[in-house]
Length: 627
Image (tube, rainbow, N blue to C red; front, side, top):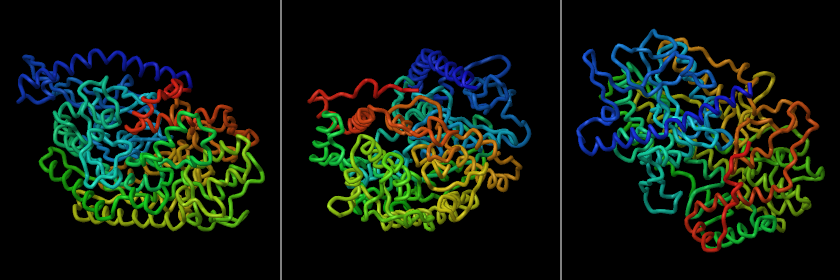
């Protein structure tokens, strides 16, 4: 099995190398044609073939050919010359040709472990939906797969899943939400659109996902622009008779407030800098101090002020959601294919496994020092050695803060020193601790987001249908709905709850399949088909995020990692069949943490300039992808 995966990776790399020269030439020629004959459609400009028999044209088509299947066994559409007589469309050739479009963020993109690659995307919910539909009806669907180094594998394949990791309801249209960047108004951002002409220049996720659709639109292209183009042009050229659009937007309108990391002016970092600074490399320590002093970096993401800054206002969300979805519907009203839109509700970001409660901290940190307990000011989720009745009770810290505490305790510091992360002189550190009240504040805001989604869906029915995935996930992760698969019960707990990948935010394989089955069930009813649900018992057998030996660690996936993901992978279970074998952090853990944080803050222009002036650079190994 491993050798097969390695061979697939080798073929992927070879495919990328093989296409690059041809792709650059084709793109350059097409751009020349656009300049000379601007009235010609970009699609026709890329390839135009005349024959006595018929005119061939470029379109999307799926195929049953084994050579066109990925390592996960899925079919994918290809960009190719196709004559009108060539009507191959899917595994099942009967029924109307159906296109599947994905609009959204990391959940629809297929992110896990804070990483985007083909392995993760192939196991994400939208791919599972596509696999099920393709066995029942002719389906047109394409993923913008990345390789293990997060490079686009086949950049000339038109994607129909245009969801982008990190997208929010504003960046859907290429806008930066003013509050999160410290501005006075929403601003168009080049970083939130696809605007590159050649594959070699694809850098950010918007370029890597949306390309080459921006060549066809002939303008900087937002995710929403790309979806509109797919409806108006892609569906017509592929002769799709109907389309289904999964519209799952809004999760990142509460993510920064919940996760405590990211943003700009300042960039928030949930790290206890004053406690751990002596463990960090001198160059990083200096830059962090300068950044904090200049206001470019903040180590207090969980103050009420910071939370409100990073949360989208309820009225702003409602107006932008209505605007974006209405625009999508209005600008595709003349599309050749009948469209059904699933407007998906949002789960509580403040209930994810990334947020560690008192029981989590004592469970894991007592593995390092059996005497560990949280300080009195840290409100518990339940009394010591008592069952958790209300998972929403008590204070939380971020997974990154927890990782720092683990590393600090492993370095020989005392429990009292480690707990200075949570309190100083008997007072809780509000900036690093997310209180129960603050969690409820975020949840209430998400409730208003969902009210807006329901209202917009109802206003545009029957074209738009509500998919209440958020309620299902909330009930599952808060223990209100018991989900058991393969003898494992799913909960909000990091790793021990079996529901999340190692980043504690994105669902693991089995949770992704649960989401897929909700969508499949609804599409069966809407489309009058009988697509089969994903076999959960089969999926869990190959789910790397299940804690099989019950020691609180999971084996995790096997792919190259870098940056934050590399830090997460330090917590992979070295032997998930033996609970006595525990995770041991590497002796150079603080060097790895320092290098990762340095690479992160160098994304801040002021810090990049300061580092250059002082000769501070990222260690080369930090930029490497390590298996």
